[in-house]
Image 1 (cartoon, rainbow, N blue to C red):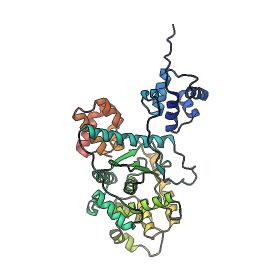
Image 2 (spheres, rainbow, N blue to C red):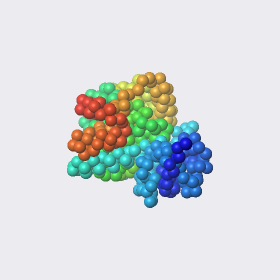
Image 3 (spheres, one colour):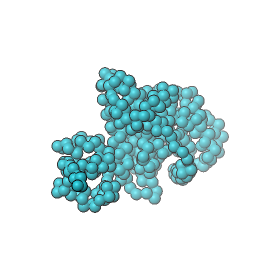
Image 4 (spheres, rainbow, N blue to C red):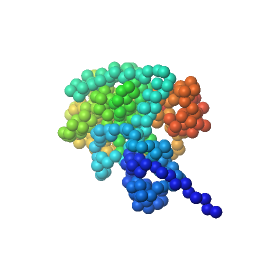
Length: 396
């Protein structure tokens, strides 16, 4: 006798909400379930009901707990962030992809979990106090960012290895009271980074598919957004010809991030800048590489700084930016191997959040199952996570 399928009775409106919150249409979901698109529409209309197995598959696709489909009304979800992105040449507009929506929701969830963990541990979350106004001068604003995260030029000049520099910049930002996450399933065309400015525990997110030094600039860019109290989705660039309010905000964030990473007096005093032909907007890869190594930023970040100081032109910057992007994409295709699961988990969640989860586990405030959910890693990797955090301070 054939086993009868168990019929589920979800709230149809919650099915619509869960699908739309992840940016999928009926055809997308139908393809994943290998069924007709009309079936999805009937479930959402309440004229048909999925089996329990099908509802579990929907929960996996929408990255939602099964119980959410039985709620009487839609839960309060994250508010859409302001979109500061520019469409890259040859791509479509700023439509939010399902991957981007999921990355934002993960960041929102982690922030909420962190706040809950602090409350459970009967501790107060760190308080980030930095603030900026868009009317401020770029150099003064850059110095304010450096003071807010406690960064000293002597320290950053010693970080010659790219991952060492990334790890230490993240540590400085987190010590100031900002959580830093990395999005691992997001194309750079979708967003280079984004920020959540709510306090306490604002969040800065960088795209892990960017080069390490590029992520440093992104994190600083997002710190500026936090200090402006403007959450947003970002595509790092510097278009001085743009006139929209959002473009002007992005240009300000880029210029201040550049001033933070490359302090003006020290930057102009380098042999590379002093010996460069006056008035020549073209900077060689070698010159940019040397500036990158001396201050710890990427070649693109150095060029953004040169643009802000009017030592290059927008047209030259744009051409080099596309060249950097193309070369990095080509280099990534040649990369072989993969990072260990525990290293990926710590890299994505960030050192502060990882330590907070481990503290909750050590004090028996959360279970190993919670540990697995919070860090999105199997429990069997718990020893490696503990060892990595204790030896290296977390982060990759």
